Each structure stands twice: as C-alpha cells, then as structure tokens.
Image 1 (cartoon, helix red, strand yellow):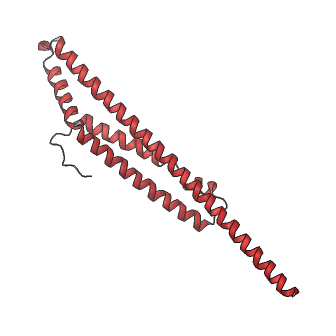
Image 2 (spheres, rainbow, N blue to C red; image 1 turned 180 degrees about the vertical axis):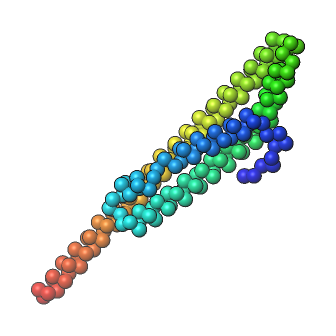
Length: 172
C-alpha cells in the first residue's frame, strides 16, 4: 500500500521504520536452506530445493505484507506527524530552556510517553503476528511433509499389489 510521503519525515520516524524493518528481516530469515535439508531428509534434492523456494516465496510475501501493514498503521495513526511534532517540541525546548515551564515539560513527557507506549504495543503486536504466521507456515510444512510421506506409502502399496498380481498370473 503506497501512501503519499509525509511532508516532514522525522528522524525518529525514520529510525523507528529502520528498526522495524531490521527486526522483521531478522525474524523472517531465521530458517536456512541447510535447515530445510535437515528437516526433510526423505525428500530428493529437487524436492527440497522446490520446498525451499516455496518457503522463500512465502517469507517474501509475509515480509511485504508485514511492512505494508506497518506503513498502513503508521499512516492511519499519523506516527510520522506525531514524531515530527515531538522532535520540533524537543528542539524548541532545548533552544529556549530558560522560558520553559514545568507544564510544558510535563506535556512533552506525556506525549513522548504515549508515543513510546503506542510504538511498543504496535511492535509487540506485529511480532506476535509474525510469530503466529511462522507457526502456521511450519505447521503447513509439516502437513506437506506428512502428505509426501503418505504419498510414498501409497506408491509402495500399489507396487506390492502389482507384484502380487504378477505372481498370481504366473501361477495361473
């Protein structure tokens, strides 16, 4: 979801965005190709390669969806504007420390505290969503693995039936 760029991108918002992207990248790239090979030893190399490519595609899609949701929530809650206002207030307060009264300091602290709490809640919920999606992906991989194993068992049964049939025909 592309949003129009906010007229003022605060340094705090850019840092928040960069930190979020680094966090989800680390979360979503924690599963290596070697782990896929170890997890599915009964599959052929081609099957494991195919499974790994599907996994990477799913991770890329999940990554894009999480970033899009982050952007959407930031846009809806006007995080960039709020952080820009905080930066401006902090800058104004630091330039004119002598004229600052205690009420302004309390207001700034309250706003900063609220933004930090909202940011923490949002990031926590995004991490929980990513964890849930990772669990769902792992469950799906296990299901596919079991289905693959069942497919091998079915092939063995068919082969045994053919063998019995040919043995029966040779005795007849």
